[in-house]
Length: 301
Ligand SMILES: [Zn+2]
Image (cartoon, rainbow, N blue to C red; front, side, top):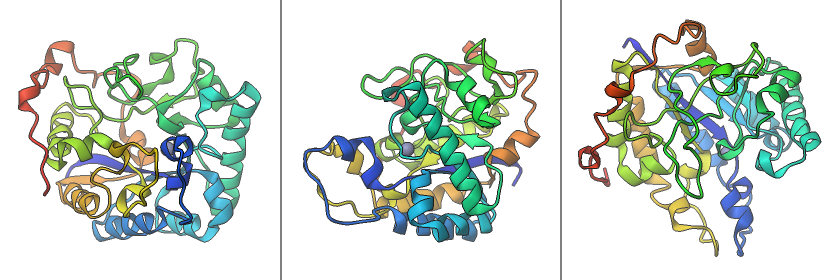
C-alpha cells in the first residue's frame, strides 16, 4: 500500500439536503443518515483508514457525541457550514456566519483545530477564499473540476491536484490551499456522489487508478444518508435515492479494499508539493476517457 487516497464524508442529514428542502413532501423520520455515518465509521476502522469529515455544525449541536467520536477515532474534522444552505443564496454577512460559527462550534465540540472547509453542493461565490481566510481556515475542498452539468455544478475549473487557491482565483489570499474533489481524467465527471451510483464502483476504482498513475491522490466524497434506506418523499428526484442503502455499503467496502492508504486531506496535504504544480497533467494526457464507450457499464455488484 503506497498511494494515498481520501474517502471524505460530507456529514449532513437527509433533511439538510437541497433536494429534500426543495421537495413538496416531507418525512417524520428524524436523523436520517446517522446510521450511515456509524456504518462509515466502522468500515473505515476495519480498513485501518482515516479521513476528513466535513460536518454541518448543526449536527454538532444536536449530536455532539457523534461528532466527538469521529474526532476521537482519528478523523480530521472540517466544516461543511452551519446550516448547509447554499452559500450563493446568502448575503455576505450570512455567509461569513456560516463559516465562522461552524468552525467555532466544531472546535468547541471536538477540541481540535478546524482547518478545512467544503461548501454545500460545491457552490461558492467570488469572495469565497477571502471569507475563508478571514474566518481562519487553511484549505478549501469546494472545487470540483467537473464538466458543466446543468443544474449541478462545474465547468469553470481544471484543477486536479492541491494548489494555492490563486490557481482558482488570482486574488485569493496566499494562506488558502485548494484541494479539488476528483473527477475522471478526460471524462471530467466526479468519481463519487451520484456518479458512483450511476456508473458503478468499477468506474470509481478505474478513476482512482488513473489519478494515482499521474501522482494525484484521489479525493472522493460520500454522504451518510447515501448508506441508509431513504423514505419516499414526494418531489425528491429519483437520482437522489438511486442505489442508496445496501448498494452503497457494498460499493464503499470495495473502494476501501483497493490498495490505497486512505487518509485525511490534512495528511495528504502535508505530503503534497503544492508549490510547483508539477503534478498538473497536460491536456494531451487527459484524453484517455473522452471516449464514453470506455466507461464500464453500471453494475449491481
Ligand atoms: Zn453537503
